[in-house]
Amino acid sequence: MQNPCEDEKMKTQSEFAFIAFHAFLGYIDEGVRAIAYEYSGPRIAIYGYLTRAPMPEDYEIIDYAITEIMASCPEILAQEIILTPSIGRFKPLKAHDVWIFRRNEEMN
Image (cartoon, rainbow, N blue to C red; front, side, top):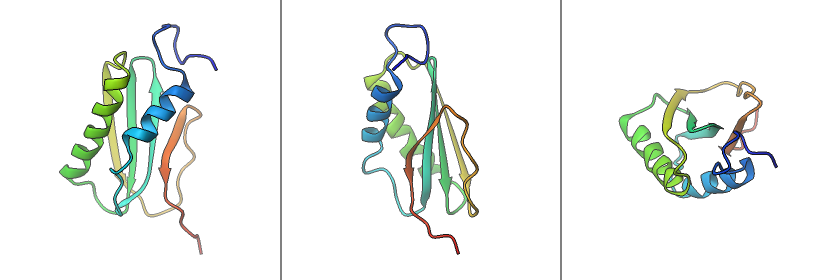
């Protein structure tokens, strides 16, 4: 698999996905519908879709997971956390976004 950037020190998408999945174990609560990430170059963005308005604790929990990711990926120099309330169907993600978690919801 090709690296997301030209730097040899960057993790492949598969390696990074494994790291991200493990970083979020135990951090997902009942208010979370889904979590996705975008990993490009020295930047990571975490997208959280919640059943309610985001609270300060939500950002803190995501920041803990990002800290774990950055411990395994020192090449990450920037982070962004985007949390949004979400009640409808999920919009399609951009091609480079990956689901970390997506709650199984039956659509009536």
